[in-house]
Length: 190
Image (cartoon, rainbow, N blue to C red; front, side, top):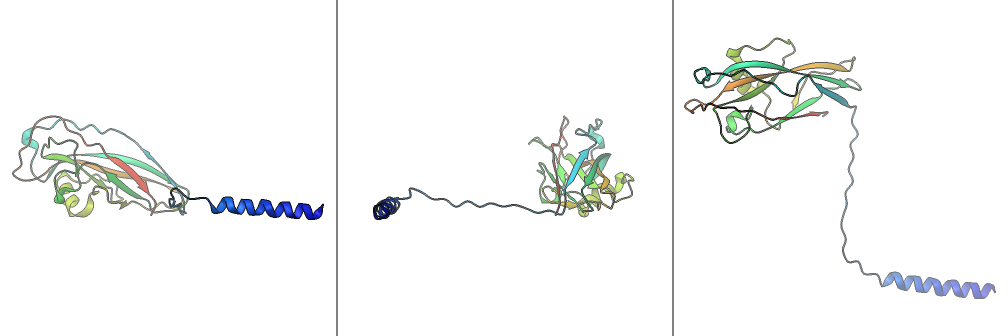
């Protein structure tokens, strides 16, 4: 009986091997799995989702000037001390010199919105220096991460982003009408 069981097991093993040898793959694909280990996480809470600016007249819109500045405040709470970054993504149609002036649509008005993080003073920048400081490197640039205030031992910070309504480009025509900028804010941990 034992001899019979060994013979039967050998026949089954040969048949299984033959079945596997006849398999022909029809296609194959590579799959990659990725993961990230971070030093912590952060929650972001914005005080407003819409900033409305009062109307301005055609005469007020001058090249390379700031007409109005408003604060946008974010409260950041992290699981431990970190230095988070903020990336702003939106439509910046005015060219390389104004990658920090946001406006939606194709009917450009020679005007837009510029964003600058607070320098830690929580004092509103002056209208006279906002635009020039922005193009000199203080403004958030489309799709480029910007480091914000460090999160200290309390694991939370209030960060103000100053939003300026700015006139751009000398010699361009300003058109009356409504305009807006819809932006996506992404908080990052480098």
